[in-house]
Length: 330
Image 1 (cartoon, rainbow, N blue to C red):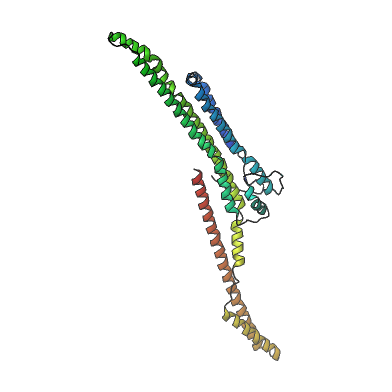
Image 2: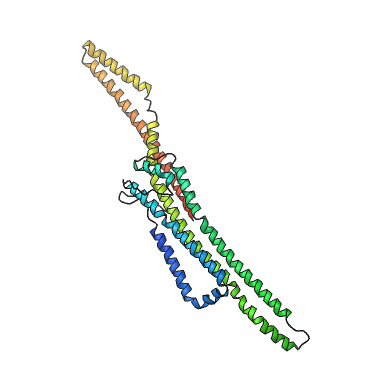
């Protein structure tokens, strides 16, 4: 997911309000569909109200957990945005505990070397918070299969009882009528035996969508936080590299020429000579100075080229990291 473009008046982190809206809209659509199919769903639910009620109860718990995973980001977002605005919030975050020194340093325009390691820790915390949702999605499917097997076992037992209770040696037509009337009840209930699978799979579908939305909200939060914390890192690296680069060494030949010209000019002035001698000395001095200036300009151009190359490599590395993050989210 692409990070937002930063501006002085825009908070670095966006609130996950749209994620909550999508989750609520999806639940509303699921509820509307259940209302439309009320007459078909009610007999299926009453076929095994205990197990089906358990499935719906687990679904309700999963819904609350999914909303909790998203709403807990509001505190973290408020804290970071307040720090970025120059405030000193009293409310401390829970997920960003290891990042508090890095956030405080970022407000001063400094990026700590341990920031990326703490960002990885925060990503692990966010992912661990959704593990229970994935587990519940699997549990709902297993509960549905359990209800199906339960219904099939009861149906087969009823069929066996009907067949065992038939009297032999009678008229074939009478025996067929007895078999048909005896199998009417178990065969009519075999369709309802799959009601638990229906509720289990539908509930797992809902939990999967909510987990997907929570994962996208967590990924966006982490990406925007990473962009904000390390936004000044490229400039810091370039500045540090330039400062650490040794001063350019001037050409010794040019330095010797310049020194010789200065010595000749000093000698001419000291001896009181004028005319052509002083003019020649001044000319030599100007040539030496011009050569030194050209050499210094060449060195400055080399430094600029090196800084631009470093910045280009940093941008390519950032693009690779963003692409990997998007592939991980997808």
